[in-house]
Length: 61
Image (cartoon, rainbow, N blue to C red):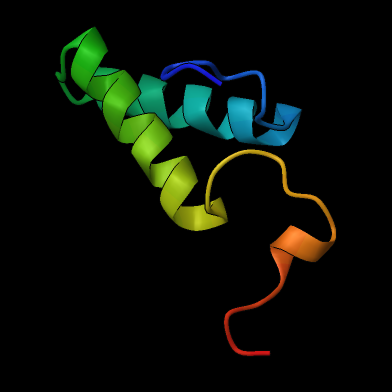
């Protein structure tokens, strides 16, 4: 998957990123910065795009 390709993200993750980006734009951030912050936040919360069953094990198992 090339960098910037958002196809591996769930619809929920895409909605979250859009909401965060909008909030950052409201705070006066540039479009590029707002998008970067939004996707970084989604990645931090969920660890990236869609996960298969075995690959999505907890770190503490």
